[in-house]
Length: 118
Image (cartoon, rainbow, N blue to C red; front, top):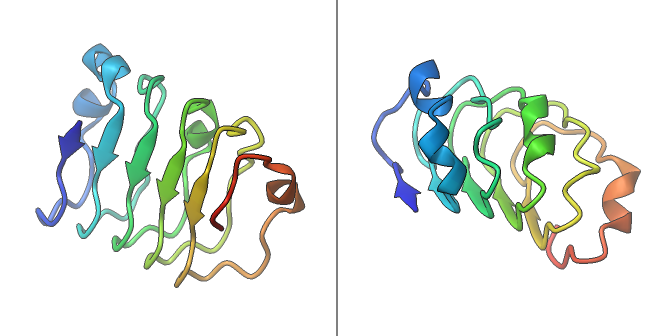
């Protein structure tokens, strides 16, 4: 578990995000920061909870699709206009995209059997 909420973070350093020790990380809380660019999540293979709500994100990284164990994804209160293809995230139970600039959600989200909150 790594809680980095409300710390005025503007970006995640590449050296931090690419650290192999992150492969054991299950919870990452980055809410209430000033992050404008979504970090790469390539090494976070065991991540189950990701909160990047209340930042300044306009786009999301396609590497989100590699988080196959992700269960909860909180992205509310950003500036997101489009959503990457996350068909691989069939374990999602919670997805919050409220208060963004997304006009249309992908239809495949309706086929996520475990998704109880959208």
